[in-house]
Image (cartoon, rainbow, N blue to C red; front, top):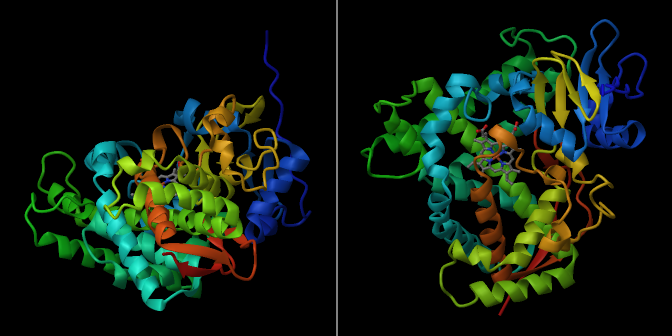
Length: 455
Ligand code: HEM
């Protein structure tokens, strides 16, 4: 029997610029409408005639699994967005490929084994307690969760991965990263790209921002050089001292880019999960009360939380998963097809840019009833039976799945757990926080809550 392979429907768009403006101004809404109007595999044409870039988008769970896992060797990180990201934040573990990637992955893998990550619970709990202490001094009041959770997540990652206090880093990262991401995205979608070396105002600004981030990484590295190889077990020390090891020594530039990738990939993503989990609970007081009951039973005894406590917090874990479903920190994941492929019976030609889209798949009515509704019970074991594996894939999948997955679940569940043990949260102002996507998901408004210390 021959399989019929169809051509992808082209998304209806502006006759002059195609989907370019829609993808720049409202990518998430544009992807959702494209699925609704045209189906699970679609083709966007972006840019003026003659300079149009084609992007294929895959929205089904089965299709996402094929792109990321089943046919992973055909879908590489050679696409325009990764190309731009590589130039902005370097060729570290997230962006590298082939031999360089394998060497880097071998080097850092030991830090991310489950046993090793479980050992970071104490650091998560200590940072949680420190934040709770600061909030208590304020004696309640209103906090803006997005900003607070960015700082919290950066502090956790700083302590765990870099063995250092990253309080100072916060300002630099907050000031430089969002505009660099926006610049990369804009270049990725732009039909005409002037070389980065040309001294246009945008290029000069991007170079300056990148320079600030590099300087920050150099400071972190310098602070870790002092100790001996066995002194510390954090990522930065491991990388610094691996320079003399037989396997996988890194040159100075690589070392800096590696640190930067972990700084970038390791904090904002988790911050989004933390902020939305707490904000959703503030919007759903009944669920908050039930989760607090669970948390009090497990973390209420005054002992420092451990990784084992995570298993005893299934309700809170479901809340975190539901927050990651509704607000996936990486709403879009890009690749480029090396050879011709067929996904969901639709032809994807060699050389095409392809995206899979947790944002849309996580709201796909084929897998989720009332997709916009907050309902953590979707993640009860019995509710998960029969759901395709990639209906929920906030951490990507296949050989390039997130290395920080277990760490970020630990940070999110225990971090939110400690805060819920000590405070109650009540939503203030806008119920729903508007979001947009640059490379990562970003709140476009404030997520304000009133916090009240508990007994
Ligand atoms: C809620 C939290 C997080 C989310 C949603 C998330 C999401 C993702 C996704 C979707 C990918 C795959 C990208 C692709 O296939 O193109 C990825 C890769 C990666 N993530 Fe995460 N991430 C999170 C937390 C973290 C943390 C805490 C770290 C650092 C410790 C981290 C470090 C990385 C790295 C280094 C990669 C590249 C892995 C590789 O290719 O081998 N992430 N992440």
